[in-house]
Length: 93
Length: 93
Image (cartoon, rainbow over all chains, first blue to last red; front, side, top):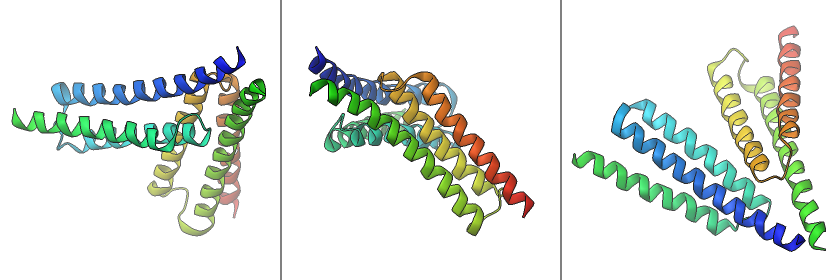
């Protein structure tokens, strides 16, 4: 049971980080659809703040040994790719 | 051994968060001593960013079940108390 709990911490850390990345993507999507343009400084600021928060969580999980460094980088890279795609799509409208 | 690893994750999470809080305190101390005044907007921005980063780490550790909610709040409260004391001391100079 104890070793299941360790796996659980690792899996939970992974799931939480991916859910947080997904939350940022949704927040930015809502913002693009309804509130402000990507050129707006507020948009940049919200995005920067959220990305900083996520990167601090990832860094913390890596330092705790709950996720590997490359996995943390992959989560951030994937989010950045999705944000770029979203940004491009909004400019084609 | 497996249960020792769980305790280790909890202890490590606690130690990392306290070390990060301490790092913020030292950063602000250096900034007060050498760079800018507490009234400077840059000082406020650095502090806000650092506090936000730490609160995200704490929130993440709480969601992972590695620290209790009240312990996380206590780390932030303690840091705020120390920052206030530092701020007051700098104004008496």
